[in-house]
Figure 1 (cartoon, rainbow, N blue to C red):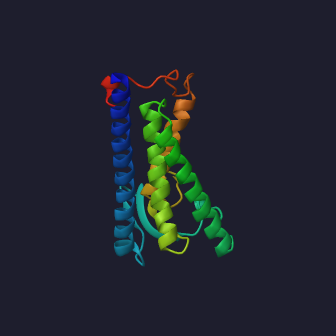
Figure 2 (cartoon, one colour):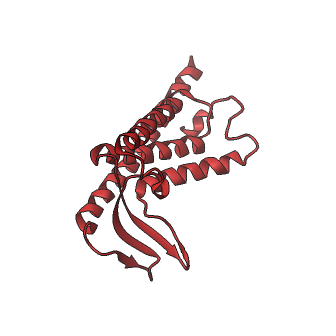
Figure 3 (tube, rainbow, N blue to C red):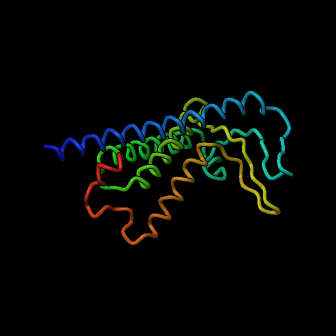
Length: 183
């Protein structure tokens, strides 16, 4: 019975961690998109750190690098809202049901979920468009325009990639983590 209680407290701690990561990610994303809309829309690009960081308002109809942006609106909405919703639900269910993943993988998935929710809110709110406003430049290299939700997704995917390079893939040999870790 005691081990059952310790597993239950781990689940509560993970639930709180997930809620913190997701609410922080979505909150930062939505706050920065609001600020970008209020201060950058209709304004020229603002540059900082010798053009390394640029703030430039854009409403993106597509996904990464505007892929899919030229699809007809109903198809684009179905693809980006529908597919994103299914994917976010799948991640949420996985996080709630899979107890043997390590904390790093758990946080990575929560980051992906936060970013997906942030961009999904935009797509529903703005008729399929996402607010983007950040551009990074380093010499001749330049990113596309992106937002904080994109950063969360990219960070989560990057962490998952690094975990995939590990021999055990982030599993804990089928055992839950020790209660002393708090998660």
